[in-house]
Image (cartoon, rainbow, N blue to C red; front, side):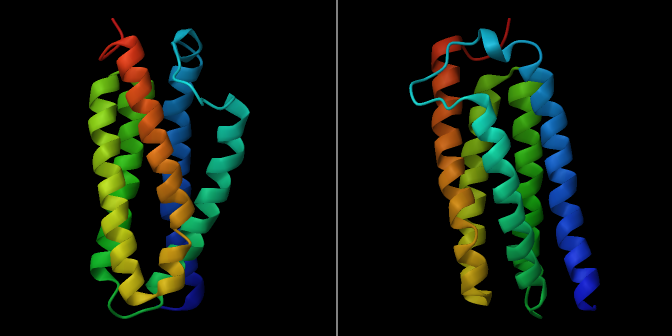
Length: 157
């Protein structure tokens, strides 16, 4: 597989995830999100629109680096798996308002990213380091999800 194809694959996976999570997120933001009681340290909405594109760029670069190695199959499975979990979290939390299920999903997402980073490190340490901001942001997002769940109930009525 040539370099351009690897980059396109990396970009396509992340772009699809960004598009779907954005779509699901705006379903909640446009309806119930502003009426929720938010936990302390919740940033203004415009912070999310700055942070996520940066994290997605790091994901594209990181996964592209992994694709340049022969032994990327398990790392690729973990990468695609965590992208799926990210989409599922946005669907559960924002599109459906199932806060408890969203919390369970994001905890699984954090765990999957942790394992993915460990696997990336065995293949290409720099690719793993590029995932640290995402991992830290997910921990913060888990706090926010737990806070919303606690302060607003398990799901929308």
